[in-house]
Length: 331
View 1 (cartoon, rainbow, N blue to C red):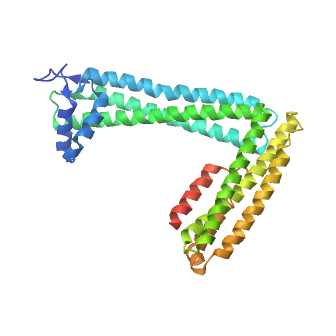
View 2: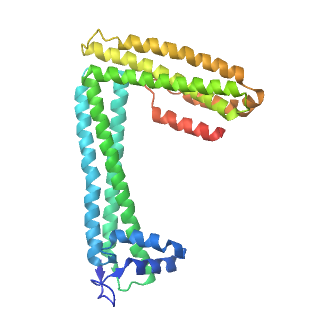
View 3: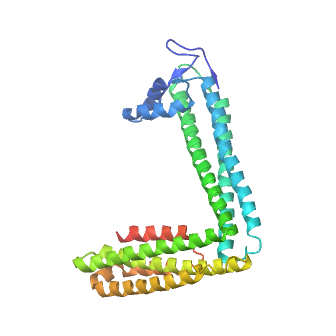
């Protein structure tokens, strides 16, 4: 991007972001109150508050480094995944192990694809900056072009940072899974922690059902929410029991300590929790009112049908999405 010689008050043949922002606001019919927001966007391609050819070139060079970072980080994720595949030798057919490997593989490919798309966007932006010849001071149309370049710069920068964080988190999760595969204590502790989390959620549900019974209030939404949560918790209990079976299989194939009673502990605990969930369901049936059922039964039935499609190992992100949707529906 080339620049003509500067005018009074400009440095290095550039134009201040404030002046360019005023041109953009006037040209695009934007509310004058947005001038500072436009100027803030333009600062991404400016140097000391002035947009010059050199500042735009420097911004593109810096952005290239930013975009290269998630590309490197997702490569680390891929290497960690290969290590996990090696660690899973002999147990890769166990359902929960296979599901996690498949899930991580899909996540790595998804982030790689997003990074490749972002790199294409960066190349297109660089090409655009090199093709633009803006006078100083810029015309209204040229000011808008500079703003569009700055806005795209900001979008790419933000997306690159998000993908970097996602890749880093993915690497950490895969590393954790590697420890799960190679260390029995990690598997057992995770299973116990999941069971305790379920127990806490069941207790919270029981408290809410008791409160609903104690007040006698016409709280149809609370009743519906309890009924929905009870169904999700029942699925969570089934998922934990299946995980216990898988861990027992992994332990057996890896000759883990047979004296650790985690499988028996979890089965006994989930049996108890299932009984409490059944009691909560009975109590909710007793508390229900005809007008509540008229209002919510159809929605709950649809949710039941959707939950029936999930089997252990459960894809919980999809369940939580369905839960949010049904809650939004019944509000």
